Image (cartoon, rainbow, N blue to C red; front, side, top):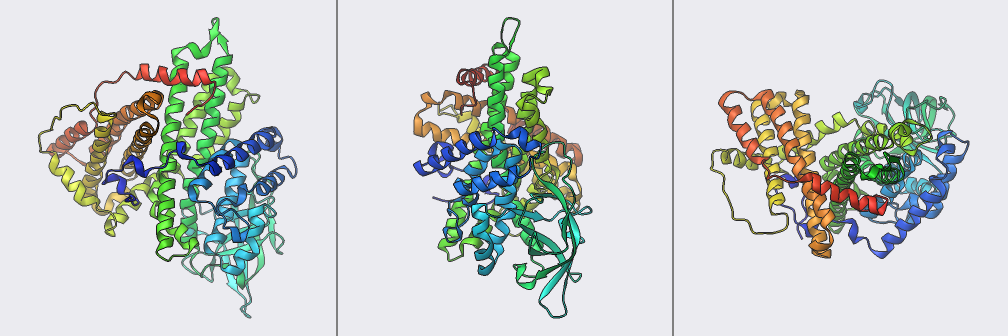
Length: 591
């Protein structure tokens, strides 16, 4: 079984057998899922108001309870007090915690950016000292990268570390801001530059070190129950053995941990989106206007169906890339690489997909909660409704782990860099597509195969991306990196192509497992999503092409774009009605 490498989805055809779908959870994973779901329902979702009021000690106590249950140590090897489960399982736990509003933020910060730098970059002594306490929830963790003057440009941070004359300590001075879990964390991973180095280094600090102080809790739009503080370092004395990895390696650590954070954010918002959709459906069934439930009206059914369609596409993409990461890790370990290095390399391989998942997931959740408020109507604007909190809490996700604008540009940048290194043969395929523009279109007889049209559409979406991106590289060359609007247009084409193909692969695999006649709703979801994606890809491609091409060249490429995004008419109203009715009948998100 050949694994598609990072970015290769654009130039190779994936097969359904190579993707993981949630229908394939094994018994152990189902037991873990049930345990997590019960914890969220009983311990977290019953305390959301107290959490948002920052009830003293509540959040750390919830993390400790999650630790006792094993939720904090899913990714941590057994020798350090964890469960040592694979990436797909850890993503499942991340998804299930995603319904917990502020708790999901604290949970993700602790298990992700708080714990993983030590797991992946710590030496054996550091791992033995910190990981067992972090895996069980005895200690909480925070990650200190952002500064008042350095957000997206993380390597421009001003926090300094100076080696003492006796060489036994580093003295750290500076400040960090927007630090999640800062109010109760015992361990901080702190990034600073040693003696004017060009690149950051990373250090492990403990909360009781002299000179480490905190500002009061930030007042925020949403995730009010999440501890967010500024952290100050005033001549903090840090033992030299607390340097994480090597001197100057901090920027690399930050980038790699961000890759993990982006994928995990996609898992977390998936859980939040399912919860918000379920709440929307329940309210639509309960609320009556003009003598009947609002779930009987077409405008509401459209919203419910579209929520489900977007969620299903996101879930398909999340678990597709999660399986890819697992396979890469396994392959690297078989080649002799350590578990920690294999995890880092495996996730780094899919850095562009991680950015795709981050953008896609955060915008799907924003769509779902926005329409949730609309379904609730005036009640949705009341703090007494559950969608009001969901709406406010969702907004941060388009900023977390690098803004969506930064991530869009990273998607294209990382794919082009892989191409320049010879890891991804984009240009050969782009040239093939360019030559195809002058060929007459071929017409094949219909075979009656499931998704015959949709399979062709997705292949053509890839051609559209390669044509527009290849032309942009050829025309703009070294100035392309400054053309942010064009880069974001191309990124949006890539995101839609990846999510459309992921959805198609999932439903094809499901059809093989359960039979077409038993998954008519999922077939409707895939057909509708891909049909709508075609028009969006056409628009993004047109906006990009008209920004740099002109004359006959522009005309030819616009004709090509039209051909690559052409679809046959589809009654999406009928399909959305079908999808909505299934959710209304189940009174919840049911896919």
